[in-house]
Amino acid sequence: MLDSHLSSNKSFLQGLILLGLILFAIYLLHDQGLVGVLLDGDKSYISWVIIAIWAAISLRWLYLLYWVQQQTQDMSALAAQPIETTEAVLSRWLNHGWFGADALLKLGLLGTIVGFIFMLAPIANLTSYEPASLQAALGQMSGGMAVALYTTLAGLVGNILLRIQFQFLADAMQNLLLHAERASSQNNDAATT
Image (cartoon, rainbow, N blue to C red; front, side, top):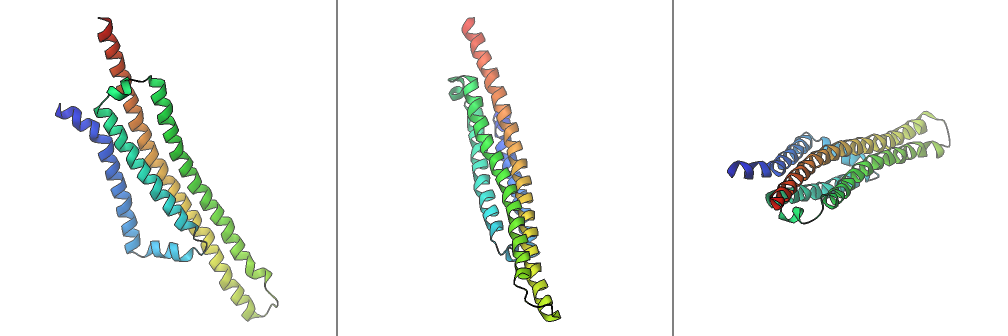
């Protein structure tokens, strides 16, 4: 009984460990000042949006892992409905995560375009080709390039993290479906005898 209980909790606990490792890595990056550099260098604030979306979807991911754990412990609710229905619901929930991961990637690419626009804006305002004005324009252009690179970095990292998280959830949901199918076939065998 204890072994069964521990294996049913495994996905949620592993998810907590994974999230803890991610947050610890973010803490280490923050401690080195790298998170501040990223957020201060992004004048478009798209990186903030990427972080907020990642945090919100990660909370949803934790809730879904917890839900899978609860369903694994009590198969009666799953056994009451057809396995196809459960599979469709789980697939829809996973699609929300994949959509979120893709949205982060696309926001990062949008930030790249915004950064290039910020980078090219000083050229349009250039009135003379004196060394002082060119130097000022180059300084402003570097700010636009920083926006482009930082938002791309934030989008790529957010996308990779969410894909890892939701692949982990997909494996847990597949395991749940296998347990539900096994329980359903055992119930059908018991009913026929």
